Length: 274
Image 1 (cartoon, helix red, strand yellow):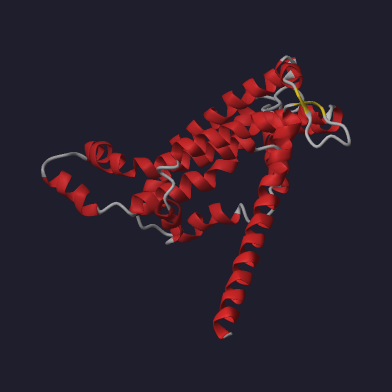
Image 2: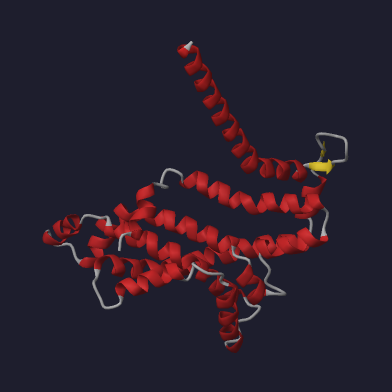
């Protein structure tokens, strides 16, 4: 009897675990599945369980001049913001990892604390400065506001990456006659490359998905895909918003799939050891 009791309890536990897993999967994947169904739905009327599949809304979205302009703007501004952030932040990250100077910890933590509260106030303050510099509603202004979202990734992850490199390798290169630049480019940089790629990918996605600052700085002529989403959701049929959501999600999915071999916990966690 006790054996049967244990089997019953074990079966109940497995059933509860399976139920919890299915509930979590439905909670996470359910909205995504519904989104995909709406994106390829010509019409979806009660009591039909599945929609009538069609690509007419894809043709409608991709044929909309405002939408294609927003797509082009996103794929120009996000890479530009990522490149600018890399040029500025990677040397700074190397300095954080290799040098000791007054205020180093406070300055490094400031990049993290800037993401600890809603950024809308920061965006408004920056927009005031950009207005004085005649950068409102300009491509340069949009790039600069997107750079703000990339700083955390482009400082902390490379800092942790450079900190994790054994200095003995660099010292060995210097001992055999390599100069500082040659040591960096032939020894340090190849070792740090996977971590830097992770930082670049996260920075690109942060810039690509930025909406609030771009809405403030880029309106009305420099609209990116996340900003365009507001208009599509409010003013167009539901399938249009679903199609655009899929388009907006594709870069994130593609880049994360390409970069999965580099997404190791060490690159992300190392930057948090001050």
